[in-house]
Length: 395
Image (cartoon, rainbow, N blue to C red; front, side, top):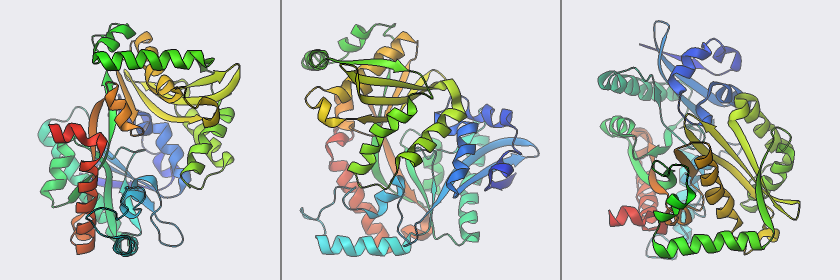
């Protein structure tokens, strides 16, 4: 086997798309050939692919993440250095605010720059589907070692798998066998609609009686406010949508402009075409909400949402659109799996989604530092105490 590294789109173009698609078939939007190619525009993407001759055995996508001040700033890596994002405020029996700030500064120095393995918010490594279990483990191990070697050659201090699903037993096993350290970093929610046979009522019957009553109340309240949801045509809807989506970035203090966001969403559409879908939420004809989602391989991935929050207050618009409507859409289109992502997780779990825990892994060289180890343990404890993690505690 050999590792081939791609850092520019013209280099990436030498991989036959059919080989890539054979590995990525059935995976989410961010793994698709066209989307990965568009992401080279960010300037820091590395694709490491394992080949045997001209046979593509597997690959990893990773980003070098660092801004001019040396602060790790991406959403996945932000969890390493931002106490606010982690809901760590020093008010319990843990470290006080001054100690947390000292830890944060130390982490920024130790972990920047950082090579973060991810496709969107998913850090899996992709291996060819026709490999047997032994071959798949060999390719996964080869890619993990290749990522570390690449980072060291490029002078990158740390490698992180920022969002490893607990169900990814192959990758978990390889990382643990190599001494990587981890913490519970968050979770996402997905639902299987198998057995519902296109009937929303069958989904409702899975829920406890009190929750069924609550869902019906929320749907009725939504309609009573004069709100309705409809599918929209792309790319025409994108410009209106990003105006709403931008409010989420501004709300959480993330630097973004309408033009930058429109460029990113347009890139998605160029890459996957009709598999990118959109819906609008309107109040008496006025646009007050929007949703982007990906449909492919028998699954739906909820990608992004935006609202005019002043217009929807008290109308349960978020769950009507991101949960109830998308389930109805899936049932109508014979889609059996919906991945709702990581936002509003507690609410999604209470409405029937299944939890998939997400773990952050750091390479042994970084995790051996005492400050890094203390931080990982603190993050792990805090997340295990979070309301959304109740299924883990009860299990």
